[in-house]
Length: 153
Image (cartoon, rainbow, N blue to C red; front, side, top):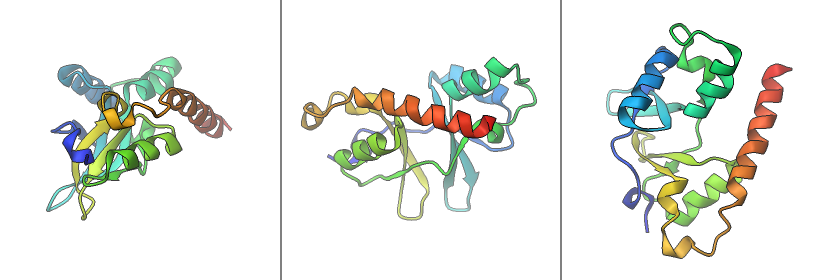
């Protein structure tokens, strides 16, 4: 099964100069926990970052950063791990596990954003039922600790 067969469309996006207030409002409007930050291209959007609801809470709300003036570029994860839309779902799951992430933007050959796939999208796939999903949250927490400690240093 290909990643594009399980992906969500369209992807909720923003550009890097927009505020986390705009991001949180978009998350609420579209009932999503992630926004792909894009650079608009002539032929399609290029993913340049990821911003999650967790990023907003952990990095902005907990530090009393003003939502009206804090930019998504201040909080987003740069250079997101992406998968090709024609990758097999096992490849996508491996990328999630290796990088401790729960969501991956899907791109085409020109790196244009085509969709997004989440861990939740993979949970019901029969060919993945024997795989150990429980390690992903632990990997994500470890990655976050390392990222926060490097920011605070």
